[in-house]
Amino acid sequence: MYFAALLARTEDGWEASDMELDDVESLSDLIDLARSAAVDDDTVVALIEQEDAWFGVIRVDGEEDPRYFVSNASVADRSSYGAMLTKELLGTDEEDDDLDELDLDGTEDGDDEPVAAYTDEDDGADDEPRAGSEPLPAGPLGDPRLLDDLGVGHKELLTLDGDALTEIADALGATDVLEAVR
Image 1 (cartoon, rainbow, N blue to C red):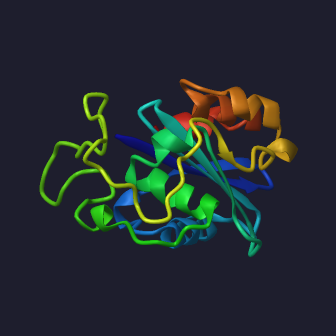
Image 2: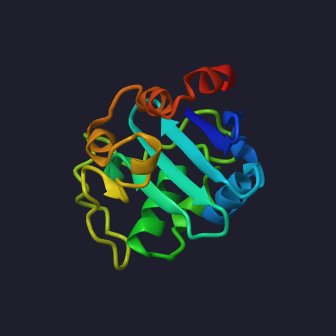
C-alpha cells in the first residue's frame, strides 16, 4: 500500500493534497501532477512511501529539472513507483516487461494481492538479470540535499526511517496539513 501527498509552498505556508496515484502511469505524469499543484511556480514536494519499507521525495521548483531522493533503492526498485524513481536516478530508460503486466500498485490487472518480485526463499538461480542492470544500492539514492534549504538537512534525510514523511513534514512546518490528507 502506498501513501502519497503533495506539499505546495505558498505565501502562507504549505498546502497539502492527497496525490491520486491511479492516473500516474509514468514519472512524467507524477511530475506533471506536482507542477499542477504549484502556487505561482513555487516549490512542490511530492512525498511517497510504501508501508514504511521505503520513501521517496521529489522536489519540483517551477520549470527547473525535478530533483529526486529514494531512501532505499534496492527495496524501492521492487515496487512500481519506486522503480520509476530508481530508473530515473540511474538514467535507465529501459522498459521493464514485468511492469507491462502489473498495475502500478504492484498487482496484476484485476488481482487484489501484490505480485512478489523476489522473496527470501527465492535463491535467484533461475532468474536472469535484466539486460544492462546493475545491482542497486541497499540504501539511499539520489540528491540528499534536495530539502536542505527547507529545513531537512541531508544528514537527517539520510537517517530517516519508519514514519519518515511525518518527520519531513514536521521539519517543513507542514505536519498539520499532511495529517489532514492522511
